[in-house]
Length: 205
Image (cartoon, rainbow, N blue to C red; front, side, top):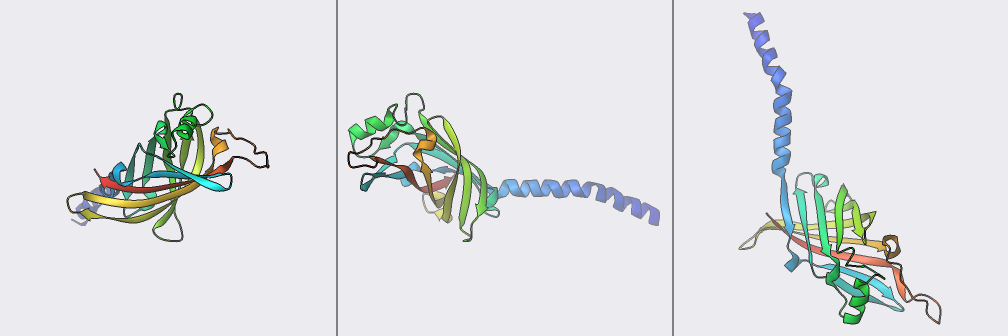
């Protein structure tokens, strides 16, 4: 009788690891929710030095997706696609130059993209270092973006939403945007460093 009992327990234990694995996988799949960027309540902004001041601008057309795991944010991912031709610096002549071959060359490279590869929690529990591939003008470089999670919750009449603040800095020349003009007084017309600021609002699909 004891031998039958032992064999019965052994048979139950053989399948136990598989059941545990399936439960973990199912739990992870349920924990991660998919969100899309609400472009109406988000923006894609940048700032670059111009002589003694700064020029600010934005891209008005973009989309993206966030797969967010609230229990394990480090397992999340985010991707973003920007229409390069939608650049807007409030000056039509300057915007036309930026769309041309000296800068974004939008006819040949119509989109700017970002895809995360790694997410690491920073000192603050709601701030993360997001490493990903940024592609501009056909050139892909790894960049680190500081992302702060501002909150998630159900909003009456608007669905389940979240807010994030994403910031980083890049050198435009790393992406082939090398055009510049040397001033008679010395120095360059445009700075190399570009500050990027993305306030994002996302809605769960």
